[in-house]
Image (tube, rainbow, N blue to C red; front, side, top):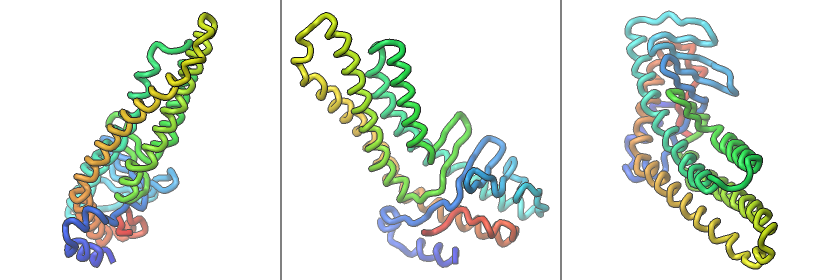
Length: 252
């Protein structure tokens, strides 16, 4: 089944692969300097230690020298791919958050600052549960390349724009309350509420569009890499039958 998918992708025109890549990850992948963990519902199904030891359901597998060579190729493929795509998504998120946080500097009381920062952190956690980067640790949740593209073009942009509007609204309310104590005419200038919002949203969208274009420009390369990883995975599964139950790279 996987071989047929590989042949199909190799026969497709290059532009079709770039725009309609069907490759995906069925399981979550957690990568650290010493380990690769394949996870389902936060539970590790199998792991690779130091690119040469394989544990399936916690049991160390006996591998031949040839098996280890294929395991290393598979491990290196994941280590090269996952940090790149996670990096694009996380960088996109950070661009939007930096724009929002720069607006908050020096505004409002300490309590208000903490409240806004908590809102930003909560939104970050909710949006980025599928992409995590912490130092040399990377996590990619189950998803396809098309879903990653849709995330950058749609979900991430919508959520960051909503966060920007909510945060700017809270900031202006705080300023209004402070200024009303000394300036009774402050409420007359309501137009000041929305211009900063529009500018902030435009700034966020420009950054996200640039990252989306970066992903799009690399989509053919990423798709071809996933086809290669899928091929290596198939060879590894033939050598280690216990892995057949955990098909990580698939064609959807």
